[in-house]
Image 1 (cartoon, rainbow, N blue to C red):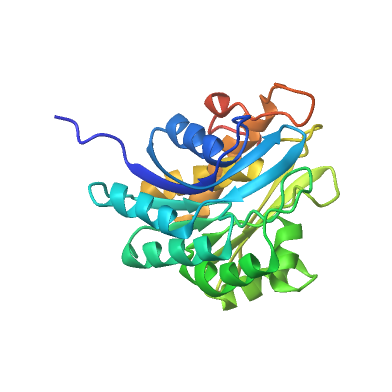
Image 2 (image 1 turned 45 degrees about the vertical axis):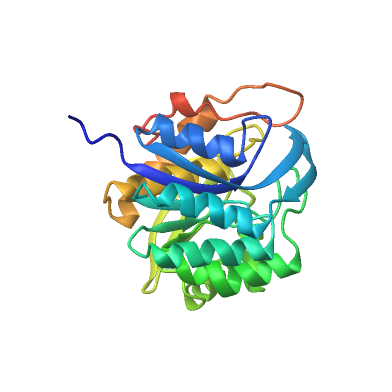
Length: 264
């Protein structure tokens, strides 16, 4: 009898559009052949144009969801997105500590793609003090990296994240200028790899969730970090290239059309 697919646990807030958040994680993990375990951290009111409300779940409920599902299932990797509150960040860090063998990918979502803030100063502090030190990889965009570290220079931002305890930092370039999106992976030894992708012409809802979840799937399979990051970028680029409109705002990535044979 088959042992079944690898399990990837995601902590995230809901997104009724299916473009980002928990729904994006579940779609990505399933599209890449793993099985998603999901713990809800908050409920949003949003469409593809922006987030109108974010309501954090009680940290006790977040911990209870995770403890219950992990009581019978073993996650091969953990992905964390919107934590919704400082208390939730600390609760997730405590759960991750108990399962230290599973690599944790932290996508520190501080704002929506439309710019709506999703983390207050207390949550930022909890990310720095509790979750970043537990992360195998942190995947901020340039704006998030600067806000988390207080630095302006991207290499220095990455160095600060690693000083906080993350083993690796992937700083993505979607919010920077240029004809290409340049993503840089840093480790304790400095720059590990740099990848440039043709900049696609639209705005996308859930691109960061897609990338981080794809990396978690590769790490669950035991792929080395640099290769996992490259494979996930290829998958995410094609998911964005095949994105579709479901409303009047940002495009939604087509996760089941993402391929691992991206542009050279």
